Image (cartoon, one colour):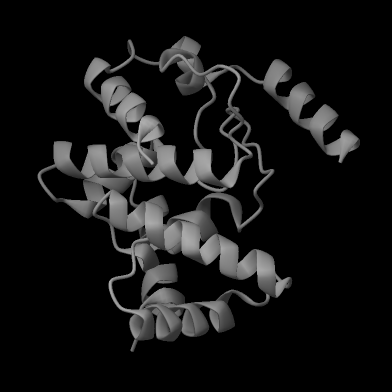
Length: 188
């Protein structure tokens, strides 16, 4: 664990941080993140919850072998996706493409956690002590950011995913997300 954290710190210090090279911080997105982080079960029906959790748990078994951690993660994904008015299976597809379900993943650009959220957002929203390796924090922020871009793109999921990933103009990332969604996460 210590080696992983040291590696993460090294990567963050070695690679340029996106926040220093990007456009100025979007104040509307900053406000949405502050609101989301400060908000406090998404399943309406117990039967629906059990069916969804069993189905998704079976699909996630290879990536997250521990059944307790798997169910905890699925409940959080469902809750945060529903809170942000996103399809939980879409969020699972984004997580698979972004981090392959490695909650300690760090990208070359410095994005962290399951949904690969840039760490500058913690400072921007006045919560520099929070950790993007915390499942609640990462999922709340990642889902909020994706919803924000979906709203900005008037419901165009392709464009929203491009903005989320910072890959505007390239369909490589969105195609990967849609392939994971269609072939692995969408319920039949």
